[in-house]
Length: 424
Ligand SMILES: Nc1ncnc2c1ncn2[C@@H]1O[C@H](COP(=O)(O)OP(=O)(O)OP(=O)(O)O)[C@@H](O)[C@H]1O
Ligand SMILES: [Mg+2]
Image 1 (cartoon, rainbow, N blue to C red):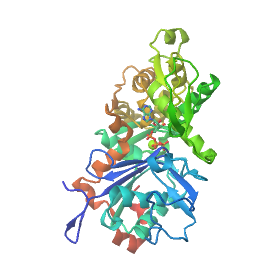
Image 2: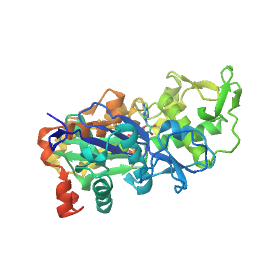
Image 3: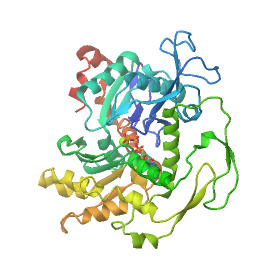
Image 4: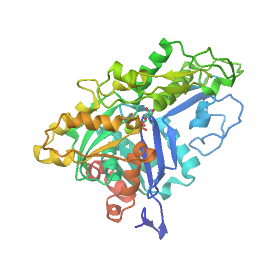
């Protein structure tokens, strides 16, 4: 099957965008992985810095105009470089796009630097959170047709896409991302929005807990981007490193973002969910893990590894197992067996070691013995982190989907509300 549609005889590839609080995933439909994962954060600085890096063109297409008072820094390399007066801003809020101006900068960058092709040639499929608001869906539709002149557009709930990516049209999708973990029932490809259950415990929560712990034992969290060089020191010895010489103080928003990235690496490497509820004595007998910070400080981490990750499960109401059981419980009795036999695990935070094993145990203790429970969790890191994007890539390239798109013509004839009719 070919991806995209035929326009004037040209075969054109559809694009898939999957926005989240941690990153935006973007790439071509039919491919296995997104072309890029762009941090969901934009650096904004007054435009008086020396013009060393290429920048995203302003709307009028000129590379630099004196009229643009700000410069925007997008994607890891540009974002991580400290600059005078650069403030970092997030454009997502509660799972939805909040700051449209910044989001458009990210889209400009995506077309120009990642896709390197003009937007008018590619149908676009966007993922959205299950509780996206009507006004926001219409706004995105309007931007894509009016500003980017896309030939066709479509919106699909990210959980439904993650189910597709795992070969299921019906599933109970457990998505653990940066800012939240959700349990979302999907029936025949459609999200049952009334039974979506959400908790604010995700990767960011683990970062906060980890940072508190690391600071309480006095660990220096200077990010790698500010370390010029470091010496080899013995375990638990005070680090000896020199900071990069910069003539200005980086903004607080820059520092907190970079420290967050530093702690994120610790969180991803060190944390582990134990099979059974955390017990200090058991944890003491489990292997410790050695970790070195950008400053050069290093030590073993033992029970803390498990204690920190336990927060995702020990909460009576917000724990991942409880979310899943509650969501299934809100669905019709008839479909529960189908949901329990297809529990799809997705999202970056589900990669915390031991997450799927613990969820499986937790959930089986909450379901009747007669209920068949099956957990579906992609083994590959990429498939797991980019579940929604991969599902979008598959959907946008199947033949029967091609009639589903909202075309430019339909948009022009019926307006942005067309999205509510064609994309439930
Ligand atoms: N290998 C890993 N081990 C543990 N955690 C990981 C791993 N890879 C990514 N993460 C965490 O997953 C989170 C990002 O997940 P994901 O990309 O699904 O979020 P998102 O969809 O952008 O955000 P949200 O769902 O909150 O809008 C971050 O907190 C990150 O630290
Ligand atoms: Mg997400």
